[in-house]
Image 1 (tube, helix red, strand yellow):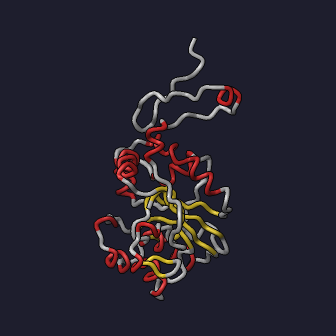
Image 2 (cartoon, rainbow, N blue to C red):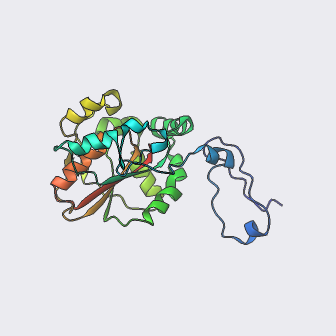
Image 3 (cartoon, helix red, strand yellow):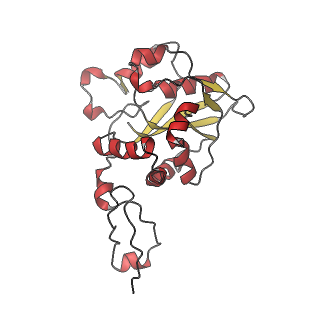
Length: 238
């Protein structure tokens, strides 16, 4: 008789071999999500990093570091139009080739179940902070139709959390195709639902990947101009 359910890795689909021994037998049963090989390919962001965007300094030329800020964040904070809107961003993983493959399956090929991979990391972060509202970055209607679901919202729901949706996206052109300068100067890409109470609230934005930080800053700016007290963000990778 097989006493152990043979779980398959959500990424590579290989059978996950359960841990054996007394500790495994008497410890609380934990759902097996991914195999040790795939788990080992995720690189967590650890070490000295930019105070605002979580960029690791170990991969950054010293010329592009300004104290506890990277060059990009210093430029954002020197711009009076953007200064102080995004209080901080925390990114969990390095956007390496493996993460890029996983995100392609999750985000572009509609493999919704992969949201489960990030649940533990999301919960670990939220043990350290207590936002009033968890706000996934919204997709345009066109993008939502293409993908079938909002990946940021999916991760929150799979984590047993309740997302709040005070923002809608009004600009549908893909940000990935724009330069940093173009992203900064595009019109506001979001609008806010004033029926949702955000005045004085501590808000945590959730998105999949931090690139230039433009999308998160557009959202943070609108929320703070609408009365939010503090706006931080959490991204799966950077």
